[in-house]
Length: 163
Image 1 (cartoon, helix red, strand yellow):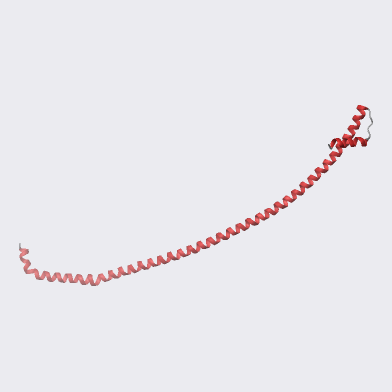
Image 2: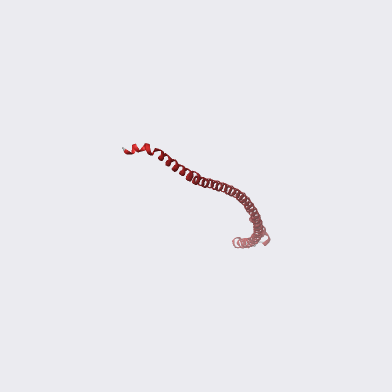
């Protein structure tokens, strides 16, 4: 094979060109491109770290605002409950006052009605006594033919009614 036979003659020049090529690649890529890539990676890492720090700070600020909001909401809720309790108490007092006034008015009306009933009862009893006296006098005169004195008839009717 002629290629293998030429190997000894071209061996030194192939090594030379291989060293030149790898040296060129080393300097172009290793010294030129790799530092730029590493700088980009470091810049990216720094950006990610700063973004994470900003996100953490924003989260902490949001947590603080949420806690402040909760405290404020709880205090407002407590104030609202206090106002509701106060309003309920005032409403209860007002209702109690109105009920007391209404009860007093009703009691006065009941007492007036009782007085009118008692007066009407007395009037009715007086009329009943008068009718009973008249009826007793009339019955005694018709049945027995007796003329009964009005005073005696009145006392007999009162005695019979009040027994």
